[in-house]
Length: 130
Image (cartoon, rainbow, N blue to C red):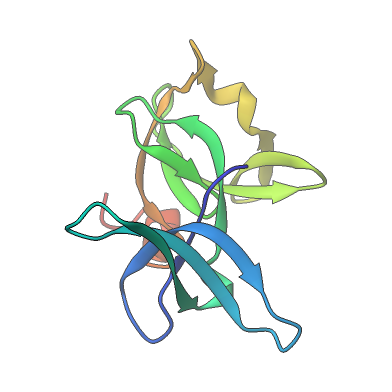
């Protein structure tokens, strides 16, 4: 099972773990916590459902895990792309162009660098602040 991430509601803190959504629409990420004595348990964080994204199972050229909503710079042309899940596939979107995410793979990794995400840094998609 792949991991999810989401931003804690009314916060700038991101958490990683298992995702659930109640019938009332409350989104939670259940994150493993280990106490000082070595005992582990799952803690549930209420997260903003708009920020929830699943891991793609891929890493960028620096070893950072890629999630839905991440923004990356393509190593070949320097364009910024965002990662989305569409019609059962992970895709890369830049402006009006949509490509399959696997088109950016080299040796099983994204031939790209993750530079942020659409929730914290939407300006990166407009080419600002690179």
